Length: 75
Image (cartoon, rainbow, N blue to C red; front, side, top):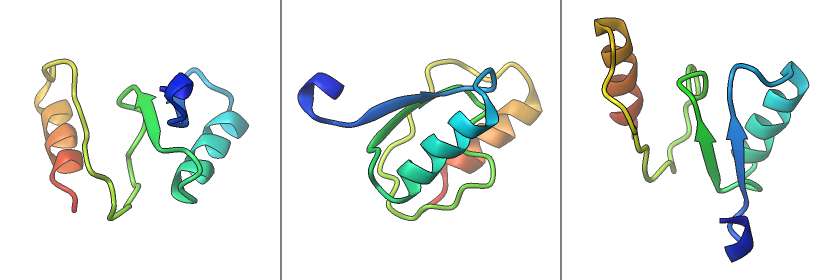
């Protein structure tokens, strides 16, 4: 995506706190357009112009299912 001039970053729980904060802030300011993330991303984020959330795996628990459905249902 970066090669196509679409600014994309990764986001996961193993990142340092300052790295995660940088990615979140840049995404909220719309300087980053795409985030490839683990389930660690998105909790508590409310951004109206999110167009797509793609899940690449089935939830393993009921809690994970509720978390994913809630995130996908935001508008």
